[in-house]
Image (cartoon, rainbow, N blue to C red; front, side, top):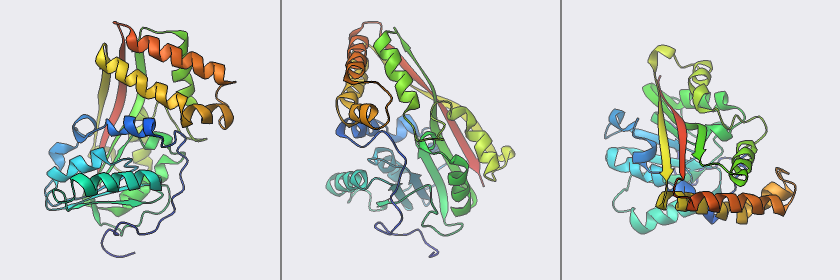
Length: 284
């Protein structure tokens, strides 16, 4: 490997165990994540000349947000899905290439050896990525390898979700969603285990900032929007995969019941949903 982070297009395996697919509805929900609502815990620690690597960057909305905090450094997003990287690159080319010349994206398998030299990165960041990975400690070990001395691994991963009011369709949907992760992946409960896995990966407990964050969607507008995002998932590739491939539901009737439950919840004037996130910064 070279002594500098590789350029976009450098090769790495693009395999992934991600089970949610990359339909328009899935990407839309990912695109709602920004540097302010998903990385606020990290922003005070960034310096203008850092090199930051976003693992599992998706459509790059968080990744792009880092650029204004690292104007003289580099921001690199890497994801296994070529179609999503193409979307991230297309958006960047259209609206941010001039504003953020330090931004790049590349396809790569973050569960394999990262295409970066030892000690070449200042910050490795993940958001809603580790919960889909069957071997999180291996990913964190790779992060430790590529980080410079004093560099940071920063992670924000879902731990648990609550919603009100409940109905049978909503309950069935969230139960299935919790199971829709690759075999061996933690899924729900990941946030509370980040610091444990980080210690196994070689980070010191004495050099960790352990915390939590959250996300809330309440009636009327945000609940309807959030419900619709998930309805579109079920009506598209995700629902089809749950029926035909993952066998998380018996048939389309169960999907229809989930859709009805989500829509009813979204329209309820008492609707309230919150997700508890584990947030961790580890210094090498």
